[in-house]
Amino acid sequence: CTCLWRQQSKSSRYLNETIAWYEQRYVLNRRPIKRVGGKGDFAQPNKYVHEGRYYVGEAGGLQDCMWGFGMRYAITSGVLAAKSILGECDYETEVRGRLVPLVRTSAINRFLMNRVGDRGFKMVANHWMRDQEKKGDGLAFMRWLYKPGIVWSLLWPIVKLGMLRRKRLADGRTVHRMPFRKSLSRDIWEPSVRAVEIGAQWDAIRRSGVKTSFGESDA
Image (tube, rainbow, N blue to C red):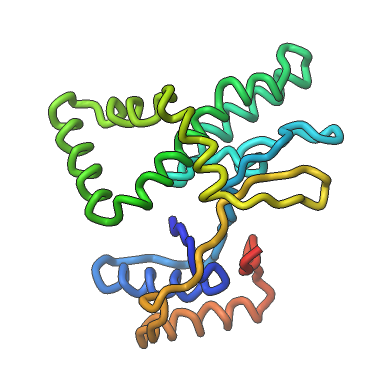
């Protein structure tokens, strides 16, 4: 799993380097060679139901802005959408009541973490590990971290204005989306010899007619 905030258009290059790194340390069986993937959307739309469409999971921006988690949001929103179609609930109301507060809290956590830097992130991670050893449950700290509160509610307008960018989509909806960051100097480096070989190997396979499940772009 690779999460990129910068250099999105060069994701294959990073994947090649990752494969090369693992090959040096582990015995990998990559046959048959395939590449699949997808893109998450860290966004807050103004509508989750629009023109008969139910936007669930990443399509609805229901993804954790702090860690990139999204499986639980996808399953929960999918179930709620199905129940709404069957007339058992109102999807828009349920998503805004059960999932949106968690997504907003994750955005606030990301906003705060961006301001404490790597040292602050390591402190949080170390505290998480100590809390897990003490309680025997790594989720206890996460539940506390994601519990919406008054302070977090007051911070949301600041986060929405300072970290997210407003954009109007082609379908008429409006979203506040976390933008890709500009490249940094450390993002510019020469690929290893093995990574270049892995890239050439994949190019040869792709020329035979195999396609990836998504394209590389900054969109």
